Image (cartoon, rainbow, N blue to C red):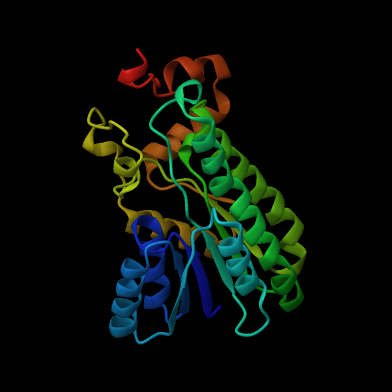
Length: 258
């Protein structure tokens, strides 16, 4: 596998994936909205790892931009061997208190964009009988954690189903389910995570290391750290009423709506 396309590649887990694949000698196609930041990241990777790095400046919520990225994924010229669907964001307020437009934008980015890009990737990977699709899900998808968690639950289910469909063609599919990870995600979503203990936090590099290990072993889902693995086991096997009361983080309305 030589060419990797990563969405949301300028920061956080996406940037960590980019560095790891570059360290393994893969050529990269980085996708994000911030051109200056994306170009800077690409320059750093070229200098440090001597790999080819292309950039696609795109707002994946813009249909024209999303189609342009999908066309690149589907292109037979310099095929994409690994697709990493990483772009996403969360909302600070629970569903009853969020503007509908924000909810729809989040759903589009977390569900429809990975759906479209995966659909673009599949024909070529299937024909070549090789390739991999890595979808960023979340531990939130195991819990009743609002529409973000619901979208991530869809991503996990979609990935597992697609994995079954593509297994006969040698194409691997992995759902990566991080817990709380030290990135810009919480700050951008204006989430108050001050009460979380330090032991709850993961590093982006650790998430990527575990994900690539699980991809190598053709596992369906990747979870980093024994705490989160135990958490996932409990969430899957406890009664849903217990999960809702004991394991889901309470979601309160913004102060302005009280």
